[in-house]
Amino acid sequence: RHLRVSSVRPGELEDLGKLFAEPQLLDIPDGSQLIYLPSLVVPSGWSASNVDVWFAIPVGYPAARPDCFWAAGDLRLENGTMPANTGLQALPGLGQQVVWFSWHVSSWSPTSDSLSTYARFILRRFHDAR
Image 1 (cartoon, rainbow, N blue to C red):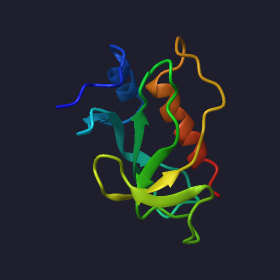
Image 2: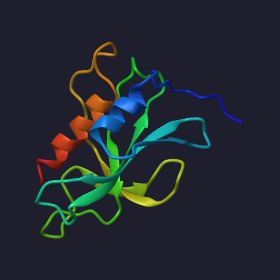
Image 3: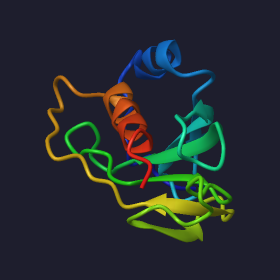
Image 4: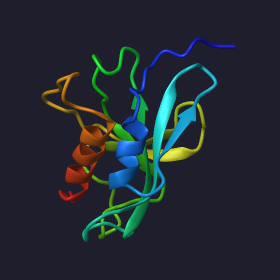
């Protein structure tokens, strides 16, 4: 049994659900948590129009900001190549092969930013198909 090391604030998952269809909070065996955004709609420039996305809720959240994210393992650019600043790796705690995006928030306020803020940040990366 593991101690829960992240803290989703009351109402945050519900707020995320107002922006994205059926977000899920996944408990990982090591005590950490992932947010799962199934079938996220992505703009043109990608090999799919919808993609599953995950991001970790870091230890110390919300004071600690989320960092990086993962997408379905078969996601590529429209031309078939891997996106910039990505790599294939196992999804933490779940093991399936996914595309890891090295994508970092430059500023974060634990009082005004949220899981929804970070999910919108991920969407901005998909608008930059490179």
